[in-house]
Picture 1 (cartoon, one colour):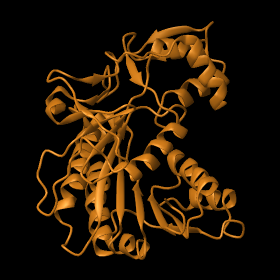
Picture 2 (cartoon, rainbow, N blue to C red):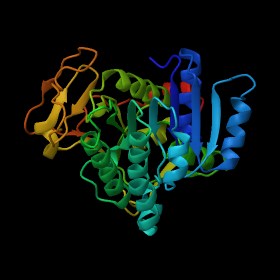
Picture 3 (cartoon, helix red, strand yellow):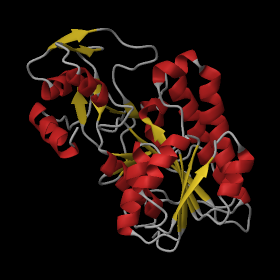
Length: 337
């Protein structure tokens, strides 16, 4: 799929970007693999991990998604885009709303404009469970971003084949956005207890490898306009703490600004648009596209999905698959976290 193709990933120096590059280099032979990010230190570190002398396809491009001109320049000749750049810390976004809006909303608009200008073939934007019935600013900006990418399919010219889709998933195990690095740091510091925001709190749980694989598969499946949601297990945060530190006490500290007790990836308000596939859900666009009409119940790979019930809601607390403490311990060892 990606052989001899030009690929760009915004925010490419993050946890997702590093593994995405590693897996793409192992599986495909891309023509160019462009890392677009604003952090020169992370780019420097990444260029040592994936040096251009060894990986001839690698390109490193300093830039911010807020800068349309720079983004358009980086997208010249690009076939596939993964939009991973975002301000993601929920509590920080509550205190710095306009900065979050400029990156997550303005940046999304710029990605769309640059992709249309350069006639990119396929674009997938990474979203989050926070975008489903959002209660915080981060979730509101990502919902807006999702709407921008879905509606962008109506901006495609008659001679263009550009298509936009979205991938929505929950907590990535071991990433900077998860609680795992926080727990790990506290254990290294010799703390005698682990902070738990609420004993009832649950989270969806996906590994970085699963997230990258799902994005790559979504490129193959997409018509354009869909939101892809993987079927993944849930965890109880108290079980995670038990798995990482079975002998330590747990201290309830209360929910942080903007934080949810449970995560949600498919809202009951979206149930009339949601289709159930073997390993994922698909949320159809709520709008019609002017140039094409797709049968979203059958994707490009000919996989078939069925409508969910009208009261369906996919939440971390009503999931039919919860990881046990033992399963979390095994995952912990597999991830070396």
